[in-house]
Length: 596
Image (tube, rainbow, N blue to C red; front, side):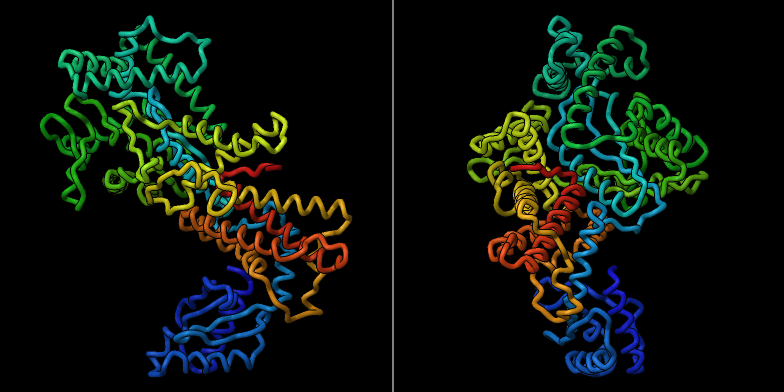
């Protein structure tokens, strides 16, 4: 909350006291969506008028009359609007000071201390060894990285963690096919993309004979046996194939993480938590220390219906831990490694929201029977799905089993090809062009993911996502580049940047541009986006800011040699815009090119 907002709330509390009216516990103050309605607005009159048998507008005018009799610092005008809203307009001097703050704070502008002293683990991306890194993983990565950065912006110590599947039936299917095609396994000198593409094909073949149209009872038994052997590490030859595929998978994943701008602090692998998860389940079955799980048809299950949830299997009929049991091991391991965690945030596709509701309930029951506090410190955030826009206006679906899965890498490559064509005639050298293309492509993809609410499905449109005008990542990047170009032009003309060039103390009342009104809202938007785990709030704000700057740019001569005083202030607004676009895009995990 800004100092001006706190001041206005205190003034409202004093005014209500003067009217012998009890103030509500929380006075609601918000930024009006329509910027012409002022800088802050409150609905307090609508809340309290009925209690005092008075029309809301009459109540509002009565309250404003008291407010006007006592000057409120930084407030220029107070007015009643609509059915009884009270709008506050800030003094121009306040905006001048705020622009100064942006210029002085620079790259740290927008950060806050809401989570200072907290340690928060954020788990996201979570790909599978022996399978391709698909666009669902790309979506989880973009959302997780942005939430991590917004959490860091609030002062928290963030631990980025990735939980990768490196054991299980899907891997047994791939290893079975690798054993069958040993003579076709790529060499260590082959490109890593070729080696991992081979692993993906092996999984598809193994899955087809296990569960697809060509399923084979004998092969199913062979794959089940491989699954058991890999879990027990009992077959050296299988272990060799497995270790090769596992190494290739994670080597390639690191390359992708570098490209998209993520560096994980820690990793937990499914193979590490399978046995600990199994032991937790066994400990709390009907024959163990407490009844949380029950035996059912040879398996061990959690009867979720008793808790208004659904039943899940934790140990299968062969005694192997399922994903559910491994998740118990995973979440226990997180807090073993980091016992001082304040919170663990898990980001996955929302198709397993119900599954996570069961998991967190199980963790809560375990907490009740153990000296642990895991469930209350664990939050699950589900995200939607990404599909690609089709030429007929529909969208394409993907299936890893059918082999038509859309990989994150192929999507990036396809977007880079279009970006390359867009800047082909701009005269950049090869190194500069390569950097621009990568940043524009990654920015286009991340923006398309983050512009919608986290739980929403999205349709990725290649042309719209790469537009340099309108609702896109490249549009924000281009606006930043334009602002930097203006500043460079001003330096060449020896015009300095100064927010004090138009001093609010000498001109207490002047027209405040939409750009100025938007600039000062940035810290509040960042704080809210972080608090609500909603990067789309920041995306929406940045697009509005970029649009306002481009309009301002079109309507004003910013580098004006004939009016240096005004030009200096306009340059201050330009530099503030560049700072906020750069900082905001950084919180989204998007880099800004130096040139475009």
